[in-house]
Image (tube, rainbow, N blue to C red; front, side, top):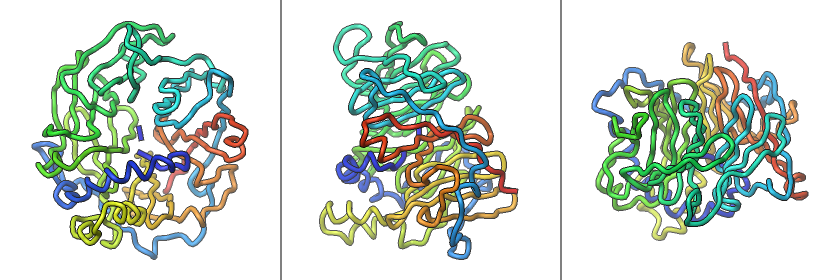
Length: 379
């Protein structure tokens, strides 16, 4: 599950930003706090965003070699609101809508609607609200993170209720799997020392990662994160932070650091310059914010926003070559409008999946399209 900016989130943005800015009051302290007892900063790739690396013009085909589109069926029972997570398997497409339908929608690989999983209520197989989901290949089940993030509802692939799992902590906001382990993360620590918790197949805690200072506990209320991965490694980052961490079964360490001009970093000193919350919320549009990132075969592909502009970039970790382009200068030559494509999931070492929004489809109240993008090597 990637933290991610798209047009359909705009009406929620102002309320969310009132809380996100609090994280950055302690950004200088937190950004380099340890992920674990063992640190490996020698593996950190520093990516300097320099003007000479910016492309004056580029094409979508400079980044994507091939794109296949899947139209999600629109019916009375399958109308999507705001998509918060997208997950594609070999045979199915899962789309989570946490705000409008408060349910998980299942589509066939051709986009045909299959079913809606989940319902509001207090009985068996019901919940107050749904937060996240996981297609668990190990148990052949769908796991729904519900209510206050302290309960997992177990469903079979057909959506039949199998039972509950009570977690020992609450306020978990996202989850993903690492082979034989599960990762659970907090949206806000709420006085808890660690942000990420690694659990075994019985949901017993094995490891804890990313410590946070006491100031963070008092200030934090909301947290939207980016996390993406393939096979046994995941990438993880915090909102408005410049560091991307890598997480596996043994460790959690900083892997990429974007060297951003200080004018685009939200620090406690900058925050102190603004007398009220609304002024700072408006200013946050100017700061660097990673919106997606993927470790591909030969490069890191990432999208980010800064100064109200959206960018695509690639970083070749073998040659240390970094290039980026403003989406205003990224020309559409593959039926993909860059600003309308939100990347969600990595399918293999060079394929990522995105959600393609279209104003015409929205006006006709049609569901969005899925874009399966085969990315170009950067050799």
